[in-house]
Image (cartoon, rainbow, N blue to C red):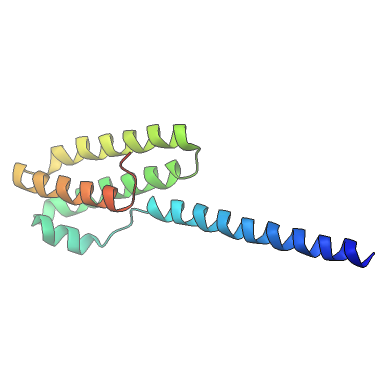
Length: 120
């Protein structure tokens, strides 16, 4: 009986350790897809005009929502959803930003995607 209890405790410990690692991986994956940013800093970095600020913010909120949505899917679906979110974001930003702003935005976006390990 004592041996069975010790075996049970050992199994629960291993399961808990495995689950903690798995949960940490899921949390870090979800955090990587969190695209909430400081819009004032982005506005300043891109030198946005007043009429551009609200539009850029709306486009970015859509992008952030699409990325958050993608984080909830398996690898294959997630990669396709991330690619589509990025493509849509870039396409919509091109309508709002001038060439210089777009160059800066693409650098910032690419850096963010790379730093979060999402560029596969």
